[in-house]
Image 1 (cartoon, one colour):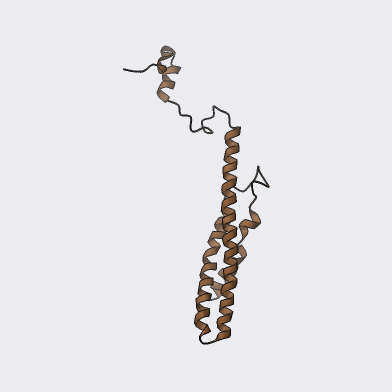
Image 2: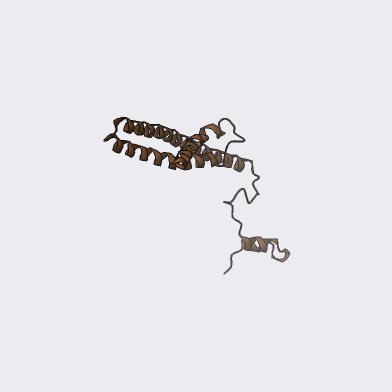
Length: 149
């Protein structure tokens, strides 16, 4: 039971880290947070918080039949864990949304500032290697544009 309490406390302490650590594109357009580590931690923290909330809720209902105060305490604990879970869900969603927006905007900036002949920055421009080789060879100047029969 002690390990469960430690995991729950750690999960609650880690919950909401997206809200605290994400650098949004609106605030930091050149150095926003692209890597979704904080939302991943928030999402992982939801598992023990959700399980604990569910177990305390069921336990509270069962205990309530025999001991009203004990059941009420368990239900209150379930409510607190559920509140932490709700905050963590919102923080996680915020983090996933903001990191995705940052990646999209940074990709747009990269495409706008890349030189037109850079093949890594412009993957939609394909080069026909056969016609390129035929056009580069001194004997075949212009043959790449001809069609074969």
